[in-house]
Length: 344
Image 1: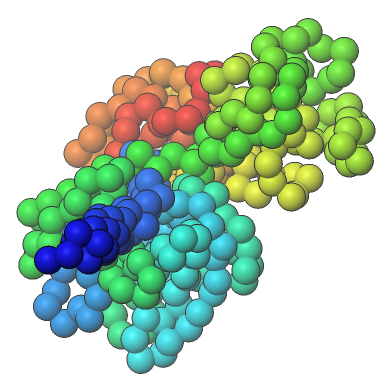
Image 2: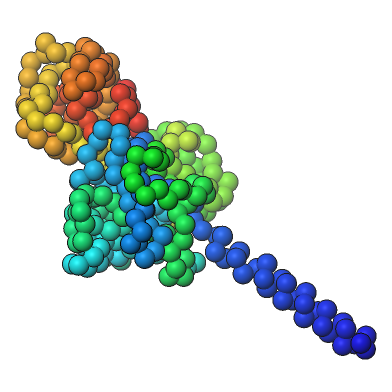
């Protein structure tokens, strides 16, 4: 074989081999998907043979109620709302960019507007049984360029069991409970002890930095980069406040982030649950919660030990709107002490 032809052929083989190696790279560049349900909740999952795409169905296995449980964004992206009467029912699609999308079927309702940007862990809807569904569950898919992929959470491939109960997943998707993941921009940005320009500097962010925002509140108006804003974010790891101007998000008030002092949102369960003036069973009754209710928990503390529904717990939550304490047994969460809630 002539040398020139041999070199040309060799070059073709090398280029072709490089292409073969490069092709899967884009598919591997997936977001770090997290569980599509709330922080610290434990759900079991299954896959049935009729699924066209590589979906998994999730139901709670931690004693909490599946129906009405928040469905949350597995990763950040642009969310759109949809409805299919004979199939998916109410469902949300999140476009994460780069060809990656996630799907959330059978929702009882939506928590986002159509086309809204959502952050990882932000609630997008409530789990239900709309469409062609045999009961409340969360149908979840990960697609790359329109093709269903084997589901990975935190980079780890999940199993595909044919029934519930064999495999369980505990969520570390905690963005929606007051520790929301954002990125800052700009350089030399001061983090202060309060939402005031005169407050002491806690630390300085040298450049763009991933941060966890616990809450936000209004403070001094800041004028910078052609923008005015009086909202400030409390950063978890830096333990201080930064003007929302330097959070890389177009909204002045960040979506999915609670107001500082407003509390953390949870769901109660049970009926005729008493809210008391203190964390004691002998304390006066402030009000009674007649059924499952959305509540804002300001803080929690240890008090009298309560045994109910086969559970014993001495932690009590201070409810913002009811202005009293309720045993954590009736907060729809598996932990005795609630995550993301400060001590009273």
